Length: 406
Ligand SMILES: Cc1cc2nc3c(=O)[nH]c(=O)nc-3n(C[C@H](O)[C@H](O)[C@H](O)COP(=O)(O)O)c2cc1C
Image (cartoon, rainbow, N blue to C red):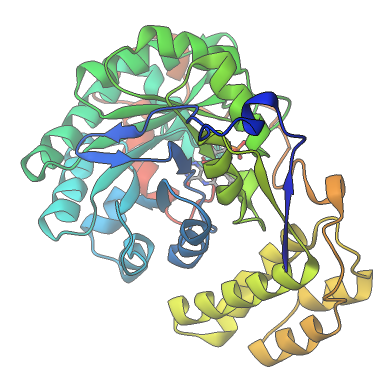
């Protein structure tokens, strides 16, 4: 049973007037989204099953895992699986990674001509060494000419179909090499429909705290399209605080919803001015975990693969709930749905929500010793047509396939 928890009623809540929304609807090109919340693309996580679960609980924009434009253009089966959407999904948001304007343009054309997406998001935030070492992800906006060309190619290819393009980026390579204000202005001038900022540098990876003040500064710099704030939203209250302190037009939530798709219900309520919050007991958690596993098995068309995929979610779902170490370990090793059912049956399904223990940070929190970059990358903002930097870039998309990061 889902317990809901209402905060102490404020004077406003006691009045008969309906709660008033904290933000107006989010407009991304032709799409008007009543709840200005975006599920952050997360490689290995935000596949169609997880997006469907999140969508059921709330509303907003639910972005696919990243797919490399090259793999899509080469029509690899895995890339088509990555861009597949759950039935009825709207808008269908696909995140593309790319470093070569021609390939990105071709990938966007493929998506719109084959009616595979209603919205394309471009990944300029990946901090993973094998991507930045080749000049991709969070390294790319430093090369302003290349960044402009990639964004322009995507916007141009999407325009005939009326499909909006957005960019998602970090604040920069490191504290001495910030890119977000210039990149935000360029993207706006090139015709993107929104910009999202994960307010960390690549060097910060997932460590420390996101610097929300950068979101406020981006909001001042980018004035004609929505600015979406991202970083460290682990509760609806965090989202309200980000909106209040930055003036952002919507929030992008990543790790906070791991093992907690009902966070989208909290976010929808909070942004509608409603203090109701979801506080599920273990029975609801177990049923959601089971359904997630079933959806993954159907998505992969392979019980073993679906079960291996659900394993990484187990600890997130059970965070804070009274479940013994042995049972947790067994759940994290299930091979079949039958094994999953046996283990879930041993849970105390009557256990209520454990309070703060189930809340708070989850997922990656680590840093990185140093951002890997092509030699000489930071020397200037131009990209030489030949030499080691150009070669690194040419290899970038090949090595980004199957990367989990952003
Ligand atoms: C496991 C994992 C995978 C991610 N994959 C991507 C990705 O494919 N594309 C992207 O733009 N960001 C990716 N990110 C970054 C998130 O979209 C988000 O920007 C980041 O986690 C910060 O938001 P949060 O504090 O709400 O988690 C990933 C993050 C995690 C934890």
